[in-house]
Image 1 (tube, rainbow, N blue to C red):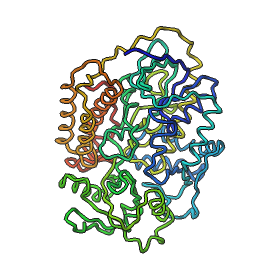
Image 2 (image 1 turned 30 degrees about the horizontal axis):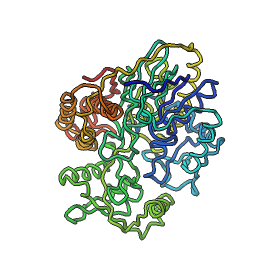
Image 3 (image 1 turned 60 degrees about the vertical axis):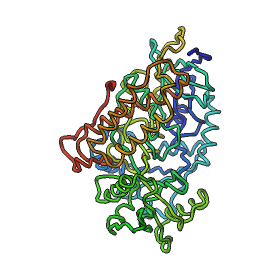
Image 4 (image 1 turned 90 degrees about the vertical axis):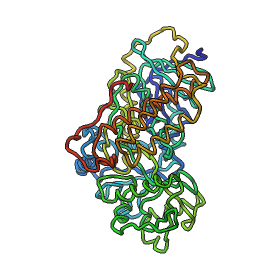
Length: 525
């Protein structure tokens, strides 16, 4: 495929959510040329997901609270976190939030600091809570991008990266044309891999491409078996997140119109956390919900009915949630609402160190595309904070590194990279991967199911004839999906135990034999 445009920059940031934007802004402070590339528009991805009423950030109450916070992260992570990354995260949250306020981002603060609904999922005490507001974040970021003279390339899908001397050549599709970008430093900030799942609480640009591209370059991936599944609306307003605090106000009806009995202590515990976890007895709620899906083979198999008489007594967050549902989704609590577990966020990803460096020189990563700071489970409010903190760290160090690399001049060849033949890549291949991953690699996992999904994906891959594709963008997305889904499935197969968000029906208990982080650093065959 012939290159239409050649571009050059010092620092290229791929991904335009909170992590990518902060990386670009911070890199520009090193007085280097910075380019921000997004497959959609600037201010996209999970950082600006429209299916939730807002995102929260949580910070330590004070300096003395930092060690307790890191200890709690490690406990919740089942020791599957890199403690150095967790420490770096907690150390920087408060000052980085102040940095956002300085550029015009405002935060909602609690009216009642002792409101129990404001203790984040899986945490055990009140800390400083900040409600991250989209309506002030977007204009503030766009102003700062303009002020720092950061170049923007929107609607640009990165399809391939290769090293050339001390630089990297990034190939991308823009307006159906191939462009090449030469950069001295590269920051991956592309978000998670929810796009590999049929039901996910993500926008369509969260495909796992960043993890796949980095992996193919030689970066290591860690903790790929750990991810969050949260109940969401199947209907109405598909892909709307459920506020778990309101579970106490709900009853659940099966496909035969019979009430599903849930013990009071189970629903009380389940109301305290959004994501599914095997660490608590409330795991039975999500497991039964998913079993109902598997047995019925229907998405609309469990109906949730709210009892709202005591809504005002349940706290400000629940009150705000129902208000948001009505104003933004036109949903009343008395409507028929069908729910299922949805893939929400990845806890694993590209392995980085405290400086956001990967195992490759000149390659950095930040945000949900990375792994290590969370572990088997993640405390609520730390995903957004992670994007903020490590976005700034990645950008700063990428800018510093780029200044050490001399400018180079060389010819860039037209892309000879061979993708699968478009004639053998119908859209239903990606849909089939999403179905396999949802059915066999989500809430309930077994050896049989995981190997079946892996073998099916291998079979699809082998049956695809390797030729140059007419739609290279689509072919690359499928290629990345094949690569990454295999890595995830192999990590799940290796961990023959249940730990945090990873539940093996055939190995339902935690085992000391797996007190180690699974690292994927070699190309999957």
